[in-house]
Image 1 (cartoon, rainbow over the protein chains, first blue to last red):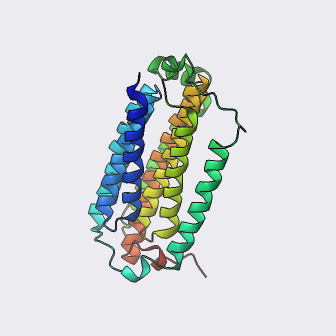
Image 2 (image 1 turned 135 degrees about the horizontal axis):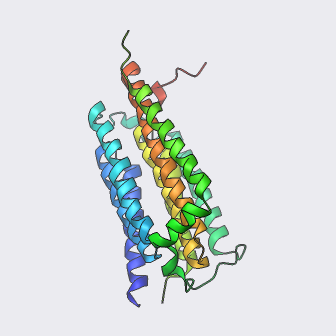
Image 3 (image 1 turned 90 degrees about the horizontal axis):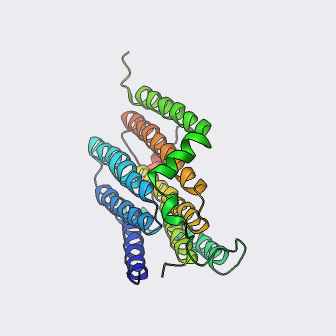
Length: 171
Length: 101
């Protein structure tokens, strides 16, 4: 497949562009929409990595459930554009940029220019079989059964907590 | 031919850094929240890439759990945002200092 590197470059460019737009735009609704675009790019990258189930879950859970919740809260609270322009490019922004750039250099050094993890250069030949629903279900319901049950309890606690927190006090 | 592993890791590092800058530089609590989601996703990309290149399902199972925890975090975090907004009428983190003394 010769189209794969081309597709990767296109998707990576889209992902980085939407991420930068999300961080830099002052209107929260546009931030949320660009983050949804970023999730779609990442889902396509998961497909390039042969992770079919996770690509579907990325769109269903992140772009579908979580971002709908975020957009709903933005609409509910009626948050407009940020008006405090003096604080948008302050000392804090510069410190954040410098720290972030340092972190980027560190991560790139660790991931790309060292052989610390000795990454294999070609994709594993069983990679298309790893990300299927069958393989994931096999792993989740045998090897990871206990964490899966704990996740169910966690989601129940989160639902109860969210209802308690957002409830209007009747006093 | 497929894309080598370091390209995925480099993309993941770039996305994570953008998320870190978003958390450090922005003051709107919902945008900070979305930056955290971006960081979670970049780590997910790393895990999926390693899973595909090593032919091991463990990384993708971990991504599954990260997604579940992110969903729980979104529900509770946005409920806290709504509760704070109801009391303080703001989502600007500099104005939310009731735990500071």
